[in-house]
Length: 135
Image (cartoon, rainbow, N blue to C red; front, side, top):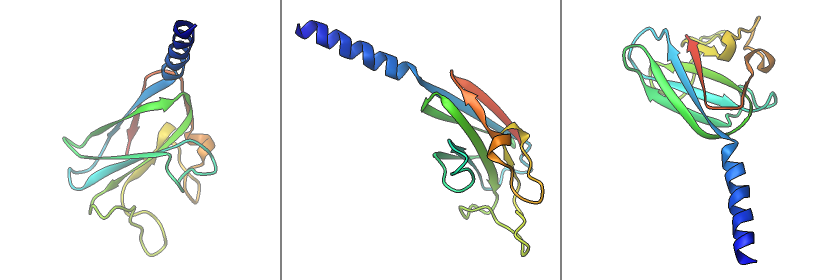
């Protein structure tokens, strides 16, 4: 009986881990190698551009960056990224509130008179995937 319970438990655990995926994000078009690139991963419309689900940053090499989010549950996500040139940990803005550092979102989503919408940036991840974003 103990062996059966152990086998069932291992089977359930393997099913749960099989749903986890890896998402690799490549960011290109960075104008220089100064500072870092921050990549935010969002998993809902309500948190998009407000609270990241997961966040990674990386130094820039040859005007490119690649980061990998491991152990993600399969599902719907969106990405926002920016080039933090002065490495101050935030997207700098001018006096009118317009970003003064380069930024982009997944699916090349653009906003009209404001930031992009989640519905335009979202994508589905069901298996290990790679997303390419150009700043």
